Length: 396
Image (tube, rainbow, N blue to C red; front, side, top):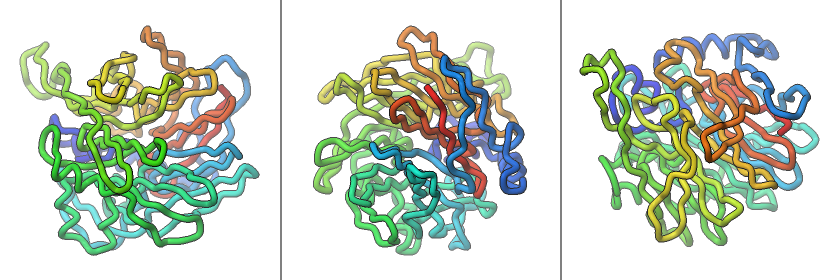
């Protein structure tokens, strides 16, 4: 039930693989990754156009990534990138919304040191993907904890019981893991998919953990499949907030009367802590992925989420700078449906509560994650590309 197959089957369900493009985009993804090493440019993964107040070309700091998603940057300037992987040889099974996905252990975390050295520091993580390596579910976010230790979030993109029929290597899908650089062994911090199976606060059980932030001795997680915000501490998982459906105008190809409104699920994609201590959560929106239909929610403990900013499109990641300015990544600036058979073109924007968002960098090929340190923003691009993903640094 990733956005890939959702676009093909026109369902109103959530996106399980947030950051995935539609199945119609697979051909474009393959074309992008087939280019020779170093050949990616505006016609490949693309660095985009820098439109902010500061001059200077963006810098590519990582390449050759497998479906890169969220990332983290430390105070030392080391950048960690969650790679959802490219699946593997199987076993294979029908995908949640059609097609076939195959299990592998190609999920990873890549580190780019402050000196620019790129290496995979955690490998062997589970990954589900189409046979061509696209539309992957696997590592979705990483949070450095210091001392070469990190928390790694793994997506699932399916009902929780799907794991029951897979080999033991798939048991870590839908969980938060503790990992150490240089190893393949991990330790389970929390099973988010199991919580979704038991709590299921909205719709049918479905889990795809997509973003994690540390909170004291625990963590806060968005579940894009479950449409909720979770907290976990000492292995226990609780539902902190639930994001309700909204209405969107039905696209013409559904054959409904003009102006007909249909339900669209919220699909929360990323969480970050604001300077006011509240949690801010981004929204992709489910089918029909309306342009301008995504919001940023503000969540305070014990209260229902409130809309903090509107007028965004298919947002996948958030980050505050040291001055309290909020930045967001839009996966597809004109909406995923409008992308057609092309790789979606997105952007990094500075968010305004009035809706007058400022473009920092645009024409980015399927961007996904953002992490900010000082005056630099790090953005993962070609997030649906096996072997073609990159990370770029932009001046804010």
